[in-house]
Image: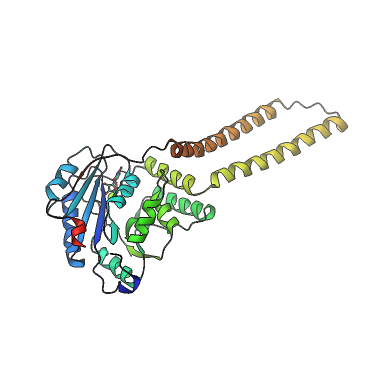
Length: 327
Ligand code: UDP
Ligand code: MG
């Protein structure tokens, strides 16, 4: 049953926490334990969806042993499809009136869910956690993220909140809107902002990872940022056109100078190095921007192929607990 806005302050919504997990065998048990103990205090109706994103370790086996204890639905991918796709899948399997997305590595404190629920009761449809510790991060991440948000805000029509990740609470209507989007290239940060709804950020400081290392290397982060930029803005294409126009104007002016010089001053022009340098420069710029066009074409190609963004190999549900029955 749908919860009306006026019923929110007293409602007991069914809460689904959705956890994407990739090689988290050492973290997943305590993360689920934490989530379960907080959820118990929040509502009588809750469950957890774990999306095992093709882990190569024992993550799925560990989760299987906890399915009945923590009301877990385990969704296993056929291979690693990436966190963005794991979240998309998890949202599809989440049945709650509210869905909260949380990492499996213990970096997202479960206690923040209380504040998220409070904000939802106040009438917000999406409550996202905004990280506060950016100053302590490596200069690569700090400057990289600054550049990213600047490019996004100046070039796309949607406003992506700074330093907000996937740790967030979403009302059922937001989840339905997200699930209805047909695009395969899923850049979640952009998609959350694109669907809109009444949203608010709450501050949090991520905890240290329990075990293991982040799956996001510098290269992966750059690739993700590039996906974001090319999925949500046409800035690189605009830059290509702008550079083309500026260079064409310069070339035209230079050509005019050469012609005037030859016609009126009859000076012999040695000009060989200038010509080569000019040729190289223009060829370089052209190649660069053909590359940019290629990137967009690749995205169109991906969408046109119509392949699913992920493949679910197996779904394991709790025997003793059916989420629908609890609502
Ligand atoms: N993750 C995933 N698929 C991947 C990489 C990561 O589902 O290909 C999950 C991972 O298990 C964790 C979350 O996404 O729950 C965040 O990943 P990680 O901690 O590696 O990234 P960071 O905290 O540095 O953003
Ligand atoms: Mg992490």
